[in-house]
Image 1: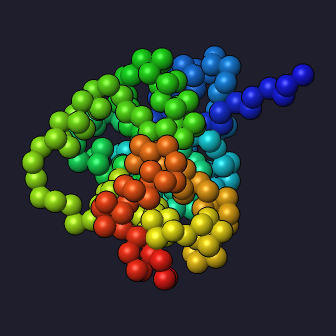
Image 2: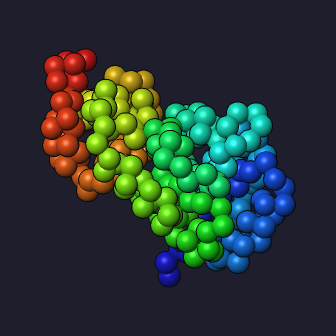
Length: 224
């Protein structure tokens, strides 16, 4: 007899208690989800994430005690295995890009249907990056617009993920990266998984090709 698949542990972060309650009720009937906590501020979100170690966080953007994007950055830096899906009224280009750079794995507008929310939560828990339909269209349009070349490649990566990718591109193994950066093996594995999801690559070889095409993995990555 096979063991049952553990439920996806979910933390809901929003400064409106009625909205949190509505989300809990909306998602509570999904058999593969378990709401393990709620938070009303960015500061509380960081503390709750550290204490509860959820699989996925639904994160509002505009809150007291630090905005959701800054909270996302702080959570991902410490716990890269926690997948964060931004859930907000604002589908503008700038907050979407900010959320990606902070380490969010998804961005869904409030008012999304239950099926869309569940799809985003399950995809994020599986290591995928996902966006609501309206957000995806706006992001595609934004990225297609001509503009200045970014100062550095892969702006969707966090600073730590970029550091890990630089070493991966330089031919370093996870064990070597663990030693060089002073991180735990699990944290390095989670960073690598996040990088694969954000770059849309299947494995380490593809990630190395993408990174080297962007000029990463030079002497600094190989001899650090």
